[in-house]
Length: 287
Image 1 (cartoon, rainbow, N blue to C red):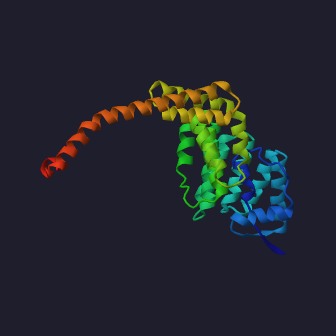
Image 2 (cartoon, rainbow, N blue to C red):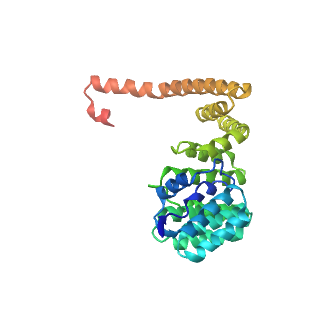
């Protein structure tokens, strides 16, 4: 008997982390999850059981068996892109970035007109490049994805992947900005919140140093903003709290000084305008 099932979307959360599985899904839950984002294909009972075993092995972090079972499915369905995505994720879990990259590149070639599969394949490629310490290509692939009209769950994964790449390159402030985008994506954003919690002290210090650079260049408004973000991350830090107050006071003082300078400049101009108006001297008034 032929039944219609769907292959592949079980890998979506693993594109965030190969260890992202937490609560095992029931067969019914798995079907609903798969049906939500992928087209349907015909699977016989044996292949459907094979698919479920892949999911089980992923949960158990038994990537060797997951790879073996996925390769069997690929033999039966060689043109179905999500299976190559699953294979790539399993290779990531097994720390085989070269094999993972090959699988994700094959997935993209076989995605045809499926935007979802193409995006997942490129996210996977970015992760594989990052595992190879090739951050240039990792950024290039993830930046090639057009976010327009992408569902929230994929936008979150992209922002999160970019955050991890910025962290790997030592850029904490851009990492923070990408994590904020992931959190605001409207999806569950659990991984982004966890990463933000893990690195919030480092990010807060980076924002504080950014604020000090703005302060030293007399850009007190931007300094206050950066210090305030540091306080939001570490609300009990007295150094950051004091810095906000210092920057605010300097901003007000600088604003008053600029207003006084402006007043000095425009006072004679206003006096001349008034004099021309009194005498109906419109020629000089227009000048």
